[in-house]
Image (cartoon, rainbow, N blue to C red; front, side):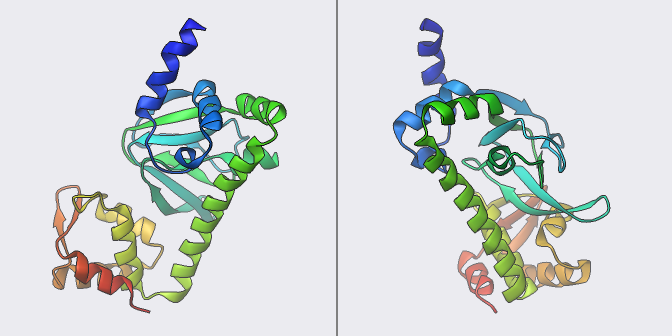
Length: 227
């Protein structure tokens, strides 16, 4: 009991006050906090790879995670770069299937890992926890549909502008190389270069070492609404 009392406040001090877990009942938050532990994932390392058997769910406390899907053969494309508060890994675990995505650390990241056994024990003892996991599944499914809708309906420049707005920190910086941005944009190299060049020429963004910075948010938001 003494060990749990020491671990509980430490875990909650570092869990971001946003995202799926922050929106769940306190009793559920407590069970999840007590069931998992923090781990450091170095840049480039994977949490899991497509085809893996599910072993845990993961919450991002610090850093950035890239979510990738296969497009042909061994080639994968990054469809989303997640920021703190993001959780993933529930779908295959709850469905009893193998992983359909690859998740890796874009930078050195601090991740909260809740093992599969702990999740299943919690569901067996507290059936109401299914609702909390359905909320996570719904949130991630909604995100996937939104990304698909943007690909189908927006111009390359608008898609790129929206991606920059999603990735930007509160001070307007984007920690991603041009190669990273190109992979996440999900468009041809030529289309990406035109969109990138256009936003720079309008003064909406500027290139900085290791990334970009938003200079004119209003102009970038206007570009993001193009259809």
